[in-house]
Image (tube, rainbow, N blue to C red; front, top):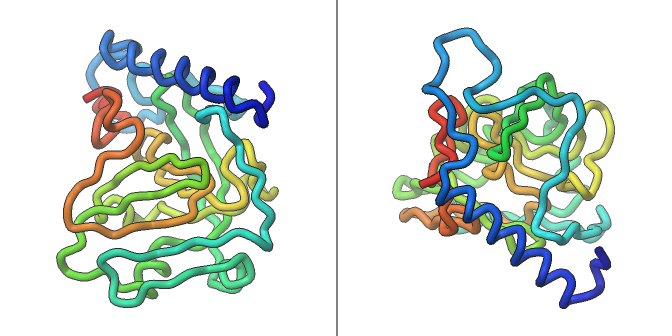
Length: 221
């Protein structure tokens, strides 16, 4: 598809949204109840070795020198990171499995970036903050509870398996929240907003579950 053709882009997005809304209405991919302890593959999922690309028809090409991340809302110390600011912060490497609502899972993904614990320490969310909303460069949004964003395996990632994140997978920086379906891990993140009230995002208002727990198969609301 020609990303410069607005009509083609709009048509692609409408078809994608319509198809996924149909899945939500039909309960597609819903399987058995969550499996008992120790298993890595949630119900209704299949393991893949590649990394499928899913988006809304737009893959922003963002130069690192132009990238900005704004963190605001109900925080004591709002901030804006440019690329050099972000890279200068303490870096971590975390390994996790990821699970997509469309039915695939990929094991042992190595992410490098800034741990969310460090970010929270810097911005200091206010006591009334209960939710986070991630805003992406392509206009996408998604919501999570703040305690889930604060989990120990959450990272703002710039690299995957030792290489810089490709634009198709959300580079230069994406959110990675492994315990929840991967639509919660916003690509091309440009703003993190802390809120008192929940603000369902792009898929959440189109029939998808507000939480998205793979082990409970919370695909659709």
